[in-house]
Image 1 (cartoon, rainbow, N blue to C red):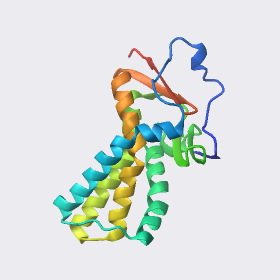
Image 2: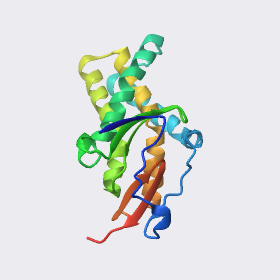
Image 3: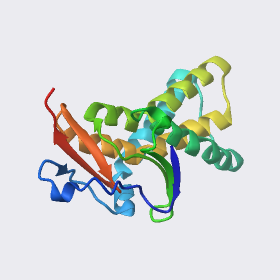
Image 4: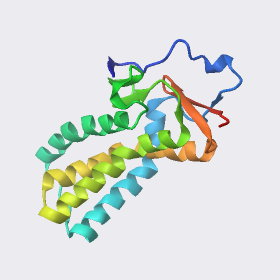
Amino acid sequence: MQFIYNEFPSSPDFTPEKDEEWTPLKESTDLWTVQLQALPFVILNAGGVVLLMYYLAGIRFEFNIFDVLLSFLIFMPVHELLHAFFFPASMKSDEVYLGFTFKGFAPFAAYTGEMARNDFLKSLLAPLVLITAVGMVWLMVFGHNSLVEHVILFNALGACADCLGVLLVSWQVPRNAVVRNKGIRTYWRMVSY
């Protein structure tokens, strides 16, 4: 695993624009546009989490500025580490990167090697599913905890771009394809087993 700052990783040996075998995903390459396109998931994710907290744990969410700030410090690294954990070879690979970019004001985890389409989808969804599930179990067992509630909610909001990625890949990439990233772009190609 490598750490980088203010840039997205790219393998110099991967040149999909010169190889007809690779198809680019129809997606925005501007991080601010991606975040705007992910806005519908703000409503779905946040609304879903608040409803889960209310109906499963009987909790009425209340904002607390201290917990807002602390939850960002907790969920951001955990969220990105969970992405990295689900990449091939997990965090042991030199093709796994963790970083932060001011271009979209976003932390990220990236993998520059090939991975199966469904493994890519799992790595995108892992933080949303796992942090929400663990947090909800915590709340059901121990009851109201403002910090845990904030972590769950802000993680759901932080996963909006991931959910947009899941939607785009699910619609555009066949099940038996592999995907690979070059910078912020995602490419796919068919494989035969």
